[in-house]
Amino acid sequence: MPASMWRGTVAVGLAAALSLSGCAPVREANGREEKVSQAGPDTRWFGGYLDVTIVPGPGLQNVPSPGKATTVLSFVTANPVKPCEASWGGSYDLEQANSRLDLDSQVDAFRKAGNDVAVSFGGQLGKELAVACTDDAALMRAYAGVIDRYGLATVDLDVEGASAADPAAAERRADTMARLPGSRPPDAPLKIWLTLPVSVQGLTPAAIVSLETMIAAGVELAGVNLMTMNFGPLPQGQSMLDASIRAAEGSHRALAGVYERAGKPLQAEALWRKIGLTPMIGQNDVPDQVFTPADAEGLNAFARERGVGRMSMWSLNRDISCNSLGQVQPAGVATHSCSGLEGRPGMFTEALSKGFVDTDSSAGR
Image 1 (cartoon, rainbow, N blue to C red):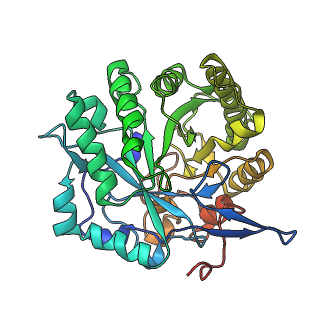
Image 2 (image 1 turned 180 degrees about the vertical axis):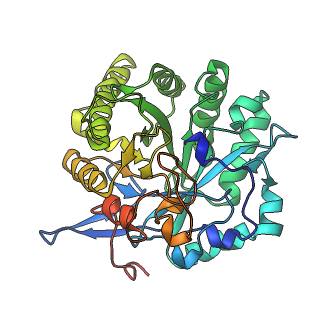
């Protein structure tokens, strides 16, 4: 995710940085119910990213929630002192996150309320585990330790920046992910999402290498999540919605080629189910690129029409106006705590999650 969004300090009040999440049926306009969860390859889901490493974080009761979803907690990276141990943003190891931040009991409480979380490994800054740790056995223990500790059904591998440019790390990451699901019972498979950068043309060359390495290692990916944000220079008049749609369509074509070359061809509809879309809401890091609420509505409509499997956003922390926080937002500058646009809290969550979650917050409880 964007470099300007990264903060290496975990909020002391992590209770103030988690959102309600879970899965439930979607009630479509025609009265038909469609199960939305991460339980299978044909389902779709909404899961906004929540950066738990920033200070201050939004209060639990204030984090925009569309109802049932799966919040993606970000980011787990390598411990800067012990490279084969996992940490939250390089600031707290897992035990410290429990003793000082009460993270374990927070996750337990969410699950008891019918919600769920996923965890994202990597991000733009900090060292992703596979980059920092070159010991295969220790790397396996590091990933597995996070998955086991938080009882994860879904992991998100955010591969960008230095991680994307390291082919040896890509091999280690892929080999580990290929072996991890083997330790799980058949009725509780681990769902692995690969989050990758895109240009307006689609997946970047480095992103395609990451994807091909995963598939070559035998990893059955739940999907590929596209970071439709921070594009290069756009033609005058081209909106972020237009750029995001072009990126999605180009990535769909690239995915078709990758799976075809791997001897695992997929039909167009199945490929769309393997795609996730993650815009950066509001002001992007590129000064003249702003993803508006209208763009969010348009991207959601496109995703539903194509049958996209996942909708996310960067980030839940930012789904509020800066003025609401008493902050002055410099023009063209992105911050980690607000979108840079005026509007009601949660407006991007509402627009992007439509059709991917049940808006009845009592459903499934």
